[in-house]
Length: 402
Ligand SMILES: [Ca+2]
Ligand SMILES: [Ca+2]
Ligand SMILES: [Ca+2]
Picture 1 (cartoon, rainbow, N blue to C red):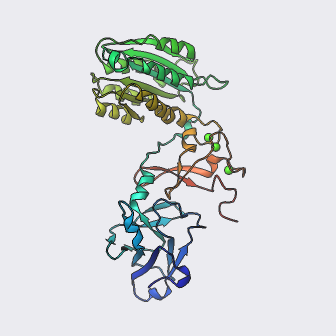
Picture 2: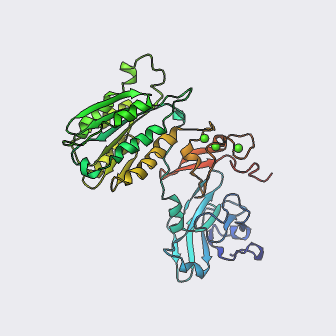
Picture 3: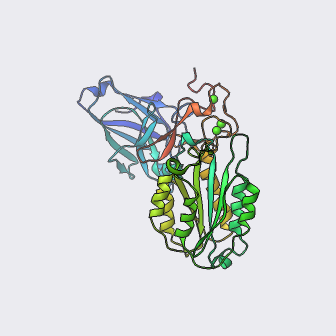
């Protein structure tokens, strides 16, 4: 059966192939969800071809085969890959049905389903583009925590040619510039240089100018022992339960990170990764050039819950450090105190693939009395990807039109 005249869409035509048990077919309704007015499946949903449709019947079905016929013009789209997506607006989930039959010659996609719902035909190629950037999960209890960051910079001889102008020192100073010395938060830094062995150039301090001076002592000579650098850095982070000085109330809740930068493959033992995990220290790794062990650096970062970055040359360090700062500091900074980090306010990807941007300096973007973080909740889909569920729209005072 097909849709009635008034439910027709210019680009897709949904219809029902089979309904079991027979007899229910007569009660089936297929209603168009006008993309111009739809709350959940508006026209800018990535890859949406035509409108979404609500399938319903008076009785529950056991099995049906639904189909979408689509306009031939879509075949011109590059990498065109049409699939029928199931849309659950209550749970805020949207994913392709299994085992679809795609007939490009006749412009038809068919799939079986065990229950009726809302469905849309989506160009999976475009849909996947909208999901390709990983959004890093935020930790609610770390919001506005103090940051304790140890810079572990490579001082091996090869740095003399790989980083002639000491860009690694400059980008570390840029990082220190965003550390806070405010009434409530005093972020701290430490500086460690390492080659064949490691040197503590500054222990943890919130004297940010002193940290920058310590960075000026970074040099370039000798081999590369990643172990020595990481080990000395980890030693600066006490185990909270064992040897925490009672003067430091904020240590347990602080965001503990190591930023390790190297251009070479050196000795490393996994026990340091384990040690970092035990202490709750995330090790962000930055590899420079082509001689370092990329797999190892990615593994250290991943296992400690951090990220890894690659700089082709010293100039690239500037951009990679920008990213690193956003993906570490901005995730724990909630400038407007609305429960969403600065990082996430700019990348609120919804279940329907749309991304909305909020103002990290406005706690209630639509002025409806609900904070942004009360309207938006972080979630993870079945593939482990981070997205956000909306309780209500943070950019519209009346999102359900009542
Ligand atoms: Ca915020
Ligand atoms: Ca906000
Ligand atoms: Ca609001």
